[in-house]
Length: 313
Image (cartoon, rainbow, N blue to C red):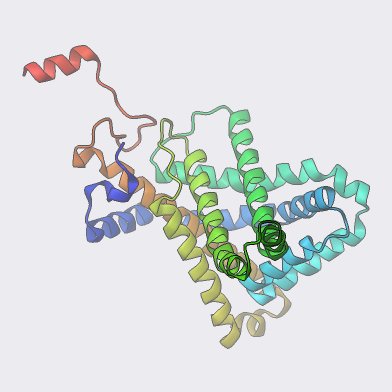
């Protein structure tokens, strides 16, 4: 299959038109609203799972969990983060360590529901029907949830403890201050790469499309990450100057802001998936050999007899 970065032989204008058409036909923004509901139900179990794993692996005295919430505070709208922070504090104070440890599997199961909703929405984007057994769907959703959790924790460790790691390496191998400066610059592209990898992993495993070629950075992943960063920081900027939700809805405004942010996050994920699907579906029209047609789960392969007959004609 041709590389996704060849855009299926489409020009930028035609690609944008097709993506917008698919967004409308697949009701992406309506499905993003559905995803925001599932994300809300999965958000707190995911945070419980993350903080529990951090505590078990690195000890209860580590500051990594607090750093996790500090970085959430930088990305999320302030009112939405305050709601999450206060809720998580209530959960932590009401649950003993044994209860939290015992509930890790339950939290993981609940958190994977959000990934299951993404799978259903991406199947629509790729024009395929789900044919995998329910246990396989749940296994994929759980695996993706664990993988994303590992990426999140790894990115946090890289950013927060990266300076100490760089100092150790620099001292051991006598690399000097230039290495430390380079590390401070490179750690952020590495974190961005982890986000791109997370999106690419979702687009590769979630939809029921087999025989797909793995690509580390796909156009859809790049678009999805950029859209997510844009809407997140744009939403924060808007609320900083025009915080109309809190004035209009009072304490309920925090819930509305959180749901709206989750809605925009879901839209970013789905639009990236639509871009990848449009490129893959355009490949047959561009004459790419063994390309997957819209709605097919695998590329069509001609039998040797049919190929010989076509050549003879």
